[in-house]
Length: 131
Image 1 (cartoon, rainbow, N blue to C red):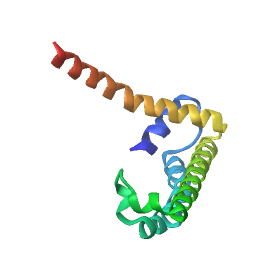
Image 2: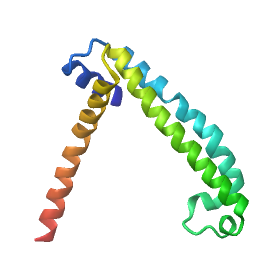
Image 3: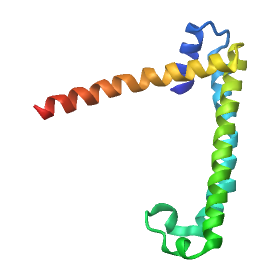
């Protein structure tokens, strides 16, 4: 659904791309994220085990090596995440023949279209139940 929303918003902002190009741009932009699953999460799962999913990490806390490895994996994950965002902006911009900044605006508007109605619904529900 995101490529369809991105395509609609990009068209409203003057984009020249098609839905197919938008879909390809979204798919290709997630390639680094897939690599992060292989490079970070698989070794992390084998090294840290269940402590990946708990708030208390006694084995990791008692080993400086595991703590350093955890921090290295976190840094790698952050770098790949930032790189994924940059590629996403460049791909969407290329698909619609506009700048990465306009692609960022497209993504922000798209997420606002999704988030705003949800926030309004939550406030209506919470507001009704508090009285």
